[in-house]
Image (cartoon, rainbow, N blue to C red; front, side, top):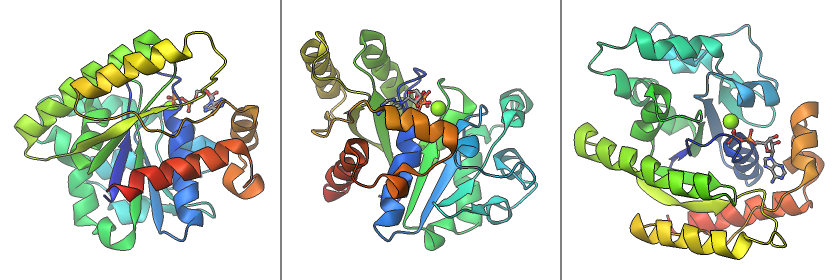
Length: 253
Ligand SMILES: Nc1ncnc2c1ncn2[C@@H]1O[C@H](COP(=O)(O)OP(=O)(O)O)[C@@H](O)[C@H]1O
Ligand SMILES: [Mg+2]
């Protein structure tokens, strides 16, 4: 399990936070880690302080630049950054029959799997071309969700996309599981939401991770200050939660 895509077409469920913290946790464990930002909003790129002057995902997916030349080597982990230009890709690739294989090809052509132990891909809140590229490139898909019916029910649609990718794209990414983020066990509906998530997970032949990521203001603060929580607050609950998630996820794969 080398390439892990973080996906859920619902916005605000902590895909980007999960990508950033998980990538850092894996890096702190001594792994070589690359994060790829496939969300045209570029929140991950901004949060980790990637420069906007270098090359970016868009140019890589267009085949103009090698992925190797677009990677930025930051202290917290390496990143293939993105910007809003990526939003135009979908229209540009309209008639390109290979449009879903751009990221996979770029990773292969640059032999990135030799350079990294883990490649973690952040995706936008939609099931369009960037997200499908991430799914096609992935070995595993981690699905963050908040305790909200729409977010949990939306996972069924994501899984339809994964099923179609398997059927038509000749690749076999596995849904690793659903992880609750920003979780507050005192919230009245948390038990009902957990039961709903377990039903959805059963239907999709996957599971709900035993690790819950607790809600923590530190995550929001770290985002605005570009701080790496895993380094600045290694003992905070949320970092411990993500460490436990990494252990749970990787134990089985
Ligand atoms: N564990 C957490 N506790 C508190 N706030 C969180 C947590 N994880 C993420 N957030 C906040 O929730 C918001 C949405 O998270 P984000 O990662 O941007 O979601 P997505 O990428 O799915 O849209 C952000 O403001 C983020 O800082
Ligand atoms: Mg995001």
